[in-house]
Length: 152
Ligand SMILES: [Cu+2]
Image 1 (spheres, rainbow, N blue to C red):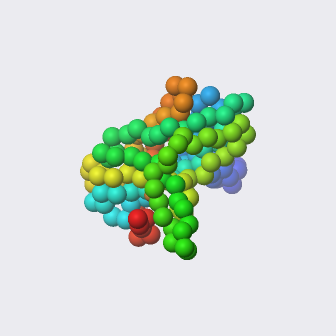
Image 2 (cartoon, protein in one colour):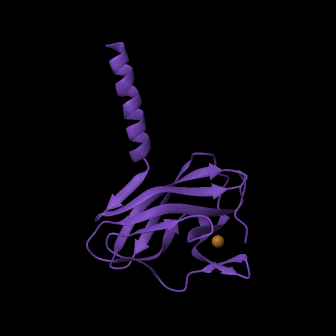
Image 3 (cartoon, rainbow, N blue to C red):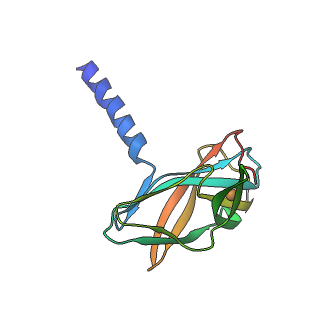
């Protein structure tokens, strides 16, 4: 009996770990949004997540709103002469029906400039993803403090 309970316990932990930090609206799913900074009092951070469009229409990401920082931008990365260069996207990001868009290092990512306060590891920060056609998805970024920086 005891063994059985332990098993249930571990199982429920792994299930909640998988599902506790995902967001879903209109069949658009946001997996594991994180905000990476190099130290507590950093004023610049980078955001990563996966957006999956399980709806039957394409969606268009316009931007991100939050109180985390003065400025939030979506960046794209270009490889020029073996150097990665980043710049704000010039048009909305389209995700077709049934497709994923992964925000990750050396690829699309969110940038936060002039972060408003010192942050703690694992702190959850409110934000909203803004899509065309009035689709707004509230999410929380989990703060990850690490020494792997995101340089421009
Ligand atoms: Cu960037």
